[in-house]
Amino acid sequence: VQQPAPEPVDFAIAIHGGAGAIGPKPPGEEQAYRNSLEETLAYGRDLLDSGEKALDVVEKVIIRLEDDPLFNAGKGAVYNHDGNHELDASIMDGYDLSCGGVAGVKTVANPITLARMVMDLTPHVLLAGPGADAFAGEMGVDPVPQEYFHTERGHQRWQKHLKELEEERHGTVGAVVLDRYGNLAAGTSTGGLTGKRFGRVGDSPVIGAGTYADNGSCAVSCTGQGEEFIRLAIAYNVSNRMKLTGATLLQAADDAINRQLQPDTGGLIAVDAQGNLVVIFNTSGMYRGMADSNGLFEVGIYRE
Amino acid sequence: VQQPAPEPVDFAIAIHGGAGAIGPKPPGEEQAYRNSLEETLAYGRDLLDSGEKALDVVEKVIIRLEDDPLFNAGKGAVYNHDGNHELDASIMDGYDLSCGGVAGVKTVANPITLARMVMDLTPHVLLAGPGADAFAGEMGVDPVPQEYFHTERGHQRWQKHLKELEEERHGTVGAVVLDRYGNLAAGTSTGGLTGKRFGRVGDSPVIGAGTYADNGSCAVSCTGQGEEFIRLAIAYNVSNRMKLTGATLLQAADDAINRQLQPDTGGLIAVDAQGNLVVIFNTSGMYRGMADSNGLFEVGIYRE
Picture 1 (tube, each protein chain N blue to C red):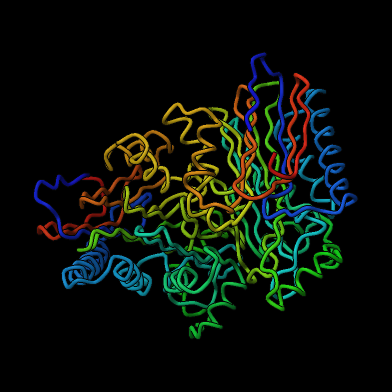
Picture 2 (cartoon, chains in turn green, yellow; picture 1 turned 135 degrees about the horizontal axis):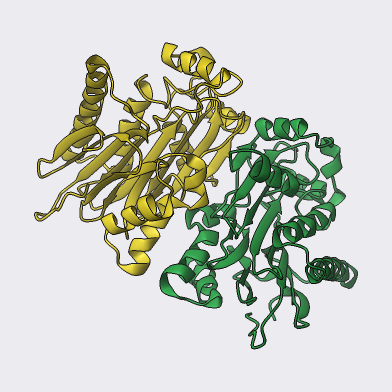
């Protein structure tokens, strides 16, 4: 779904809470997701309206989603095969392509903030495993115990996984933003797949795979089967197609999601420098929302 | 340097042992590098001549380079800031885009083989940190102690790093191959940067950044300042430019190395489906070699 933007847009934002096989939900549960998406979207929109910068809005919005146990990021992150929680995140500034990511962190409540610290405070762009947790400690980030990430639902899904009844849970979160100053930024945060192998890194912390932002093209945050998003460098793929071929954001995103990826693989949100917003997925559902300065404000879960 | 291939080429291979600020060396040391490159190149060429498949040749050639203490991969991997060795590698098959990578492994003599195991034996494409070492154990890979990776030169460079006299050592290794059956494959392996932060992941294990292979375009292995190669998804960048714009391999590689990256950042080797070989770098030197079925066989270190 692309929103035409006939009037100039001062700012725009899209958020997601993961794509996947999202079946019909009890009304109360569906409403909880809609409420969360609406509240977070309004929060991000208002930050942009008040003049906050794209990168700060991406971080703040994702912190909210990480803190919400409904989603598979931060609080509520899935259990890996060994019964632990390992979190991944990345963030990128389209202004100068500065970027940072963390993979497999176990002690950090808000991995998106740690990813930003990698970006701002180190010469590196990706830290993984115990070294990433150690970096958090050096930066004075208060550690949380593994129990912080526990949710009853996450635990039940892990138990099902151990009985081979369920292999994965989507629910990665992400945000893409155009701010009042014409800058783009993107971020993504996840607990990965339920039952994933200890040490497995998906696309979310990998710049070019799960996250990309370039003021010369667009900002992208992906969700789905991370291995496929790495294999095809999907986030960079969309940006690069716009730059090399003159494709619109919708054309580039459609090509990536509907022509390059297999069906039922996932989806992405994206925004370009003109404020065009795209939400696209090849799964049965995707938790998402988008808003802009012209009054667009909508959230969704299923295909429409 | 691109070799025109007026006659059809049955197979082709390029290898590298890293790009960087390579100053004049004592004659004995320079000869040691040339001998190693020539022997490994001849080994790979002969494997291809005898009909071995691209992916197998990439793995076998990189094992040789990993086992050679001259290079910063496997035996001879650099010391990180904490005085340990953490190794990264990835491999990709251009036939079906299957791929695997490992980051931050500490107990594996040949990370390229572990990367291939991730590709062949797991649903994942990237394992990092202790989980990657645990996977090696499950696969029956004999662990090596950290002392295995020690070299006197590596230790000295670490000591210099601690005195802030030297920040990094290049010497990543890689191989790209076209086999007799028209398939492309690429692989990369490294110890990373001397003095890197514990947990730092560079481009070498990241598909799309340090390594890419697609029979529809080319196979690429990169070396240099990994953060910049991730930021611009350089390996995928080259492949994608060929596919989207019809650029030749040389044009696409030149754009990536000489227009997108800053000077003194690194280089890459690549081969396309017609057997055109490219070695390109924007540093003062790059250890490299290339050979094909038409008798091309050359190695080099400095700019020519």
